[in-house]
Length: 172
Image 1 (cartoon, rainbow, N blue to C red):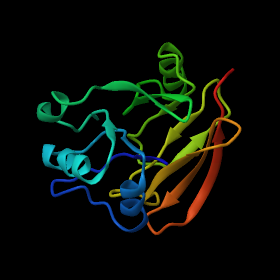
Image 2: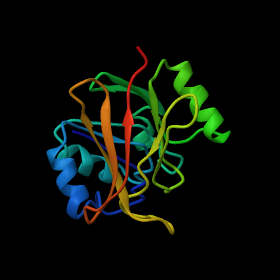
Image 3: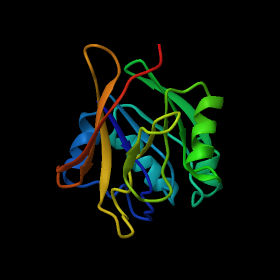
Image 4: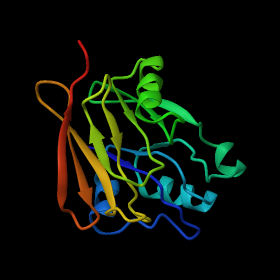
């Protein structure tokens, strides 16, 4: 399972709880889309997950920026993701970012608003924030490989309730 989190905004640990903590511990790979706030928070994620990749966000200082990139590609289950915290220009800029990086889908954060948009030229996934939802529900994303290719995904609250499902199938 691939687990996607973002926007922790913590000064005192990863702030993972309930289903989100369990999912991070169970995951084959955890991807964080930025805004840890403190290097100790990044370290707490590294310690919790078996395999962990991240990008930095606009609220991450130099100690984090020196360790992880602003953008990266991640492959899971045959799907190539372009990962960033945000791009100025909204969904159009995010789609262009994904295309420029040769990705099948984009993972991003910043807005704290969980959602999946498969209507544009490239699917966009924002897991929301598991720790500081800013008026949205606390959430993360879980994606699992499909036998016929691609991924089945869901947006899940920290209490384990699925509130949105989706599929990502790479272009052939």
